[in-house]
Image 1 (tube, rainbow, N blue to C red):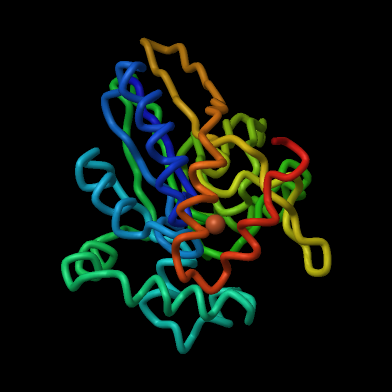
Image 2: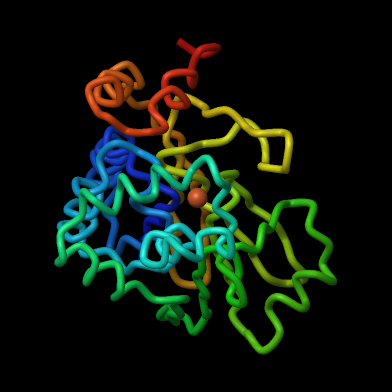
Length: 246
Ligand SMILES: [Fe+2]
């Protein structure tokens, strides 16, 4: 069984198209999207159309929560300067898109044919905003995953790919399709974007699991042209990205 995990697309349809083209060559049985689909970037509707076409299982991120309840954006850790982008994205969605976003799940569990359990989430099962990194202490993970027995854990949110041992468990982060970060976010130290899209493939064959943390280059110039032609409030931020890499 082969599962592709995509996360943190953030309205970057240019990056998602590149990932989709790669996924279509990888004999994937199921796509699971780990949240943060439509906010910040210039093409939210195209992203949702693609998820519908991929028939992905979709998990709710903090940006879906903020988009659906923009008056509570601060609770979902959306910084003030991103609020205009949140409303810009809302204005571009149709009722069917809002209905689709409401159908996203907080977590998703599955059992592989060999009996191994997997748990997928955005930040952690207890919070869409919990930032888990390779350096997060095991004691914090013990709290975050209390009551969960799955031995394969996978999330998004950090925009940083991760392949980590946690006791006897495997802990993965698929990275970000549309906003791959140079380093983890922390207040006052905003990351810039890397010129590629990230996603992960988990392959289960008998008792063998293998993980492929993939990096797919996409046309950043084409993305910036789309941003320039849009009236996206955060356009200037996008236009500052990729400078060191182009
Ligand atoms: Fe995100």
